[in-house]
Image (cartoon, rainbow, N blue to C red; front, side, top):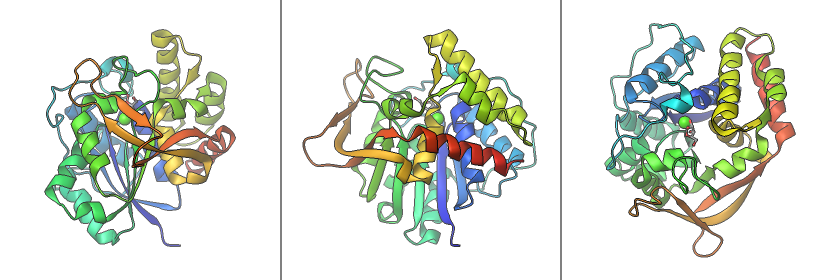
Length: 307
Ligand code: BDR
Ligand code: CA
């Protein structure tokens, strides 16, 4: 079987970590690179977490050196949401994995060239690395088969009233990705992701089953559950990056609507808002909902991989 080559851009981040666990377990995928970027926590932590995760999961992929700040705005992090280290206080062992000698944007370009038009890209953090790549390599947009972004919302934001975190951190970079000619662009936003949010019991049923990584998955899932209850009084857990990864792996679990989307880049009150409309030129498939039963089956299958 020819595997699907993918590059993951991310800012681990508790939910990024679970998304990487899923990608690694998927027999159809070949993860070529995982490129860290500043986001949930400072770059020093997202990059170290990426290296340690790759080692912990025994992955053989490149880790490019990413951007340590957004294109234009000041740094903006969410340490309270992910723990100051990004992994809710879970300390993964330091292994031998080191950064690629190239930067994230060069790694992405090289992998896109090698994949000859078949590369799928998923962005689980701010779009900074990818925006830099698109500007540095104008032909890159024609080499990427699809891009899936965990980004945006059609409802209330999770940073200011309007903006989802990843877009709020680097709205200009997100707009560059939207403006690119990458043929298929998918966006999994907060509202669509919520349709597969898990209860604590469902989370235990999935992430608590015995495997060689249960200590980690169970810890992270419980951290998310505890945080959602204590910070936002939520009884369900929307694990945003995990939902986006699942929808990228198997688009048949996802229902998208074709929309026009642009990012508010100037008004500081609503900066980072994903302005989405059914009118105008369609430039994006926006996630409406995903099939929760099939999503949960996929996650149970993932845990069986680590038995
Ligand atoms: C997104 O921002 C981060 O908190 C998560 O990792 C996810 O990528 C949700 O707004
Ligand atoms: Ca993320």
